[in-house]
Image (cartoon, rainbow, N blue to C red; front, side):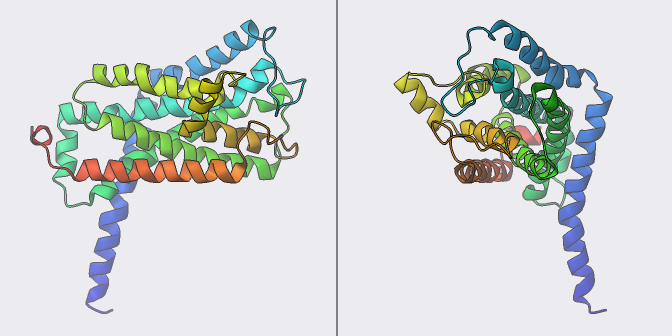
Length: 275
């Protein structure tokens, strides 16, 4: 073995081991805090049932959908994205708690790269988000949505991409904050409106300005991409619904921007991280 081999092994371990450790920590914390399941999975499912029943009679399917589409079927992918969003919120809000308890400061002084720290946190949140969203997506056949092996694999891959992106967005918001109250305030005025204006809850309709807001919202393309993958064998019309390549491109770009912002924030040295 050459003298450089141990160094290469150490470098690989120094990068991947923190990611694995922080990911496992997120999973352990989740299963020890079972009430998080109620917030991340129970509330969206309740919304789906109640709003689906209440708005069924007044819903008009958009131009790209079948005339027989019910509101619960329309709302279905939006609820899956809502579960991803809620899980990302609960996963990244723990950054504030970790800083308060001193765990984050211990990780920051460890001889690991900031990218490893960020990826460990994001991978843990992504696994939890995809796990819970997949449980909800299993209800699709009850709405008459037929899944195929190919569509299931494609949806899982897209949910992973979208879950990673939303967790990175949550990390980006939570890292500079000192209180959970501040995070909840941002969630109320930014994250929830972002979800509402993504075409998850209602289509744009005839409103011009609302249509532009929805088009400019990057989460719109996550919801639209999931819609297209759900109807793998029943291609949807392009009228008013972004194409799948466009959805993938925008989601990947948005995720890359959020990840870059997370690494940049983690590399900044601020006084509160020393406390």
